[in-house]
Length: 500
Ligand code: BG6
Figure (cartoon, rainbow, N blue to C red):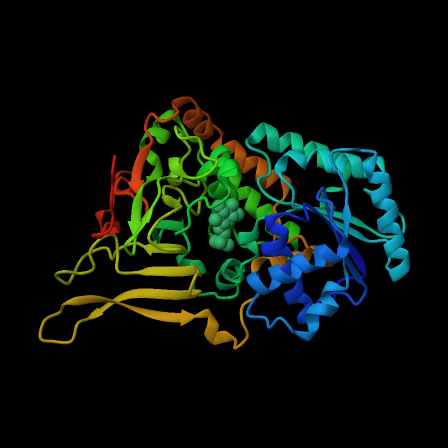
């Protein structure tokens, strides 16, 4: 696991953008400081903005201080790190510009004595995903006889099944499948990877991990943030594409998959695809009964007023884009037949929290009066963020004369395992791609299958526009209407709210 990657050049397209500044460069600096990067490495930023390498380095310096983890401006590693970064201005829509671009990259590579290995990172608007690889190919830079070429593609990977398939065909025509890294930063989170270890390094769960003992599963990712400055992108995507198609279905697959035959990427990816293949197709009736979409209206949090989604910058004032989704789905295989999986995700809610809750079945008979209400006393709560933790909830006797049952919990906090901070998702994923490990990246068939599953819902919502869209006030816990598809009233608490 601690293998240092081979010497290489990382070429980031979209270098003047937000992702590069907020996530990629601070993560690379983390890796540099922890001495996990190859000794011979160059990072080349490419974008249209005219600026020198010095100017680029200055802007990155500021970003690292702002977005990294508590660095002093005079951190001795910072200057050394910035020295391996270069900037090349290039109009990436112009095929001819690539000749000069690759000439410069080649010069840098020779001067630094780096092997012929290039990792491309597409951190550009999705519009450029089909364009840049074609031009790379025209320059014969998509393969090398003396080294390797890899490409990381940011999400969104297409807008629907047809687009994803089209993009895939194009990329697979240019790069071998094993060199295409489709990034989903949630999979880079330690706690998401820990689902696999929790399930497959322990024997106690396996006998219980099925329809005989599990009543239902909830997967939630709520955020306090609104769309911030990403109105343009988000308004054409919505929560279903932004969060469900990628992260939440992947997390569901980690939770539901069969034990893989080995820990090889392909063995795990095969199991993930099998889960997607077993998803019960969404009928028209399921869409009406088991799905819900909502949008935040103006509201408040801690006394601070928050605008409604339609008032956000770069958002259509009549937008029907959903900022909240609730979904009930079924996996039609032997392990999970008739066990509902609930997925909830939304922006501008009261809390930022991502978690998986496994609700075990109730005891066959209730012996004690007042035994846990709702579905059951027993839950396994895997909190992915924040306060990464695992909790086992069960019923115990409330001290006193009666047999009153009270739900208690046994808690494990991830931070008690280590005194060092947990590595960020991009750190892990960048390092893996540099090493050639694709385990935590999505495979093309899984992506297509997830798009295929959601297609009827995407079509329906596209057709219905704001018919059926409900509204919730920004800052609330969860829209009240979720009970309709959930069926369990215990999900409600006093802060659950609705506008209609
Ligand atoms: C991004 C989505 O990929 O993930 C955003 O596009 C979302 O809309 C973000 O806010 C959430 O990621 P995290 O790591 O902050 O939970």
